[in-house]
Amino acid sequence: MSNTNLHHMVGAALLAAIMAVLSQFAFPIGPVPITLQTFVCALAGGVLGWRWGTIAIAIWLLLGAIGIPILTAGKAGFGIFASPVGGYYLGFLVMAAFSGICVAEKGKYVRQISLALAGLIACYVLGTLWFMAYFYFGLHKSMPLWQALTLTVFPFVIFDVIKIVLGVLCGTQIRHALQNAGYFLSENKK
Image (cartoon, rainbow, N blue to C red; front, side, top):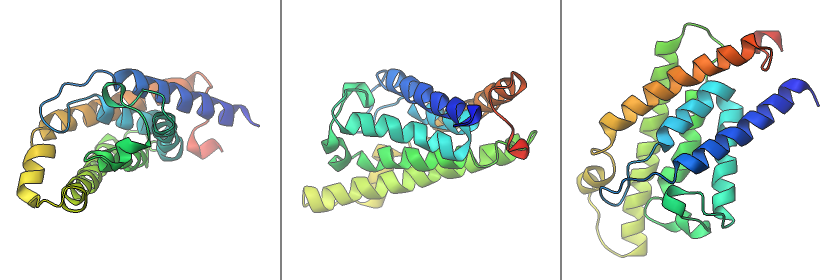
């Protein structure tokens, strides 16, 4: 095993731990609370790139799924994925992947932020469709698209955009600092 792989594994574990800690700070404003999870998804992608950033979020989700209370506000268990917000949890994987697509390209902040925002939109789409499906199939009630967006997306857009931008900027700065310290090889040196 190379040092670079070891550094990425340790980084993924650390970012999964950061996600676990920051997930405990949830501010409920409806069915979906305000959290720092979108920030950590962008941070994971920015620090580790798309592959290892996604692995970091997957570790957090798997630990939560097996019953460790590290998901939003201490929730745990596989049942969370069958809840109205299960799609958002899966969307975090997409968000972390999109946030880390072009981290190797220095100075491409606008492109990386745009990709991270595309990941956020994908998370919103997946989460909203899941939310609507939960009501239709699980509760046998109608959930119109506009009402679902009003409950699960519109209240979060401004905060999420700010968190995504900060996560990408912080993540890429941390990545460059780690590369300069010799902890991660840049993508060009592999």
